[in-house]
Image 1: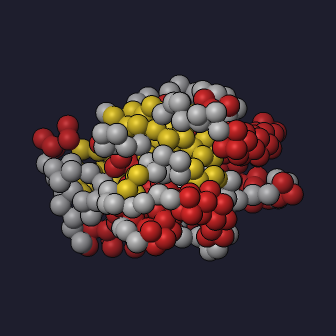
Image 2 (image 1 turned 120 degrees about the vertical axis):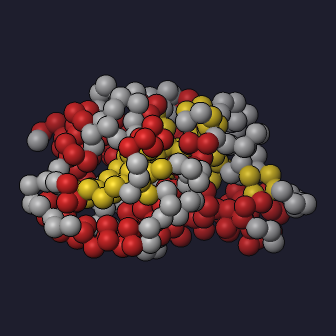
Length: 344
């Protein structure tokens, strides 16, 4: 299974299944595949944690030319365990091979949750992140199917990618909010003495990094928990500060990967009756968010589609101010990124 610098040939195509199974094979692409997040995500996808047991997966492991030499060992590790869902696997640095006929694309990107501040908009790293997003968008436009589902790390990144993938519907793009939701649930569970999975309907407005606001006005518990004034005050005042502190620490690569896998699972199979999840989706100006940017909303999912949950503000000016503030910050960052994209 030798790596070829100019692309992939039959030696790098490992197919375990039978061609008669093709109608039930999902072609899944993971970009920036040499990163720890991508590595953990691919294991999660292939360990029956995302799709049903009978769903076959053709995994495309994609990286830039400079880093593609690391992919062979990753592919060997993935195939060594011989997961039952793995129909085939390929590694490549060629976009025309990687993105062709993809059903699902996970765009990991360079930033991977990094929170840029205003003075960093002129930095080379910010420029590289914006240009990689532009490249992913142009590549999707050129090679991917029109009904591909694209899951992205970062709202700025998703806004750029979807802009350059012009013929793919914006509703096909979503970004990660699940990580922040799970972090909130973990801290709330510790506070009230229940399991994190017993907490429902947390809202994360904003982004997948520090520009986020947890809203617990509609929170519910699967076990008896008394929501008294003390808990309400903690949820409103202390939890946002705790979340900011958590997100200031080192990147949680594996946790982000697991959250990406769960995001995909919920998008694919839907939310439970009466429950919502949060995803970054294309703003239609709901809740006063600038139209045309990706923003984390509460959403219902069904049949691989999402719907923004409406009517949750209830004239709450405090929450509205937080949403508008985050929307403004995100818009400035997106405009700075597009200035770079338009100049290159």
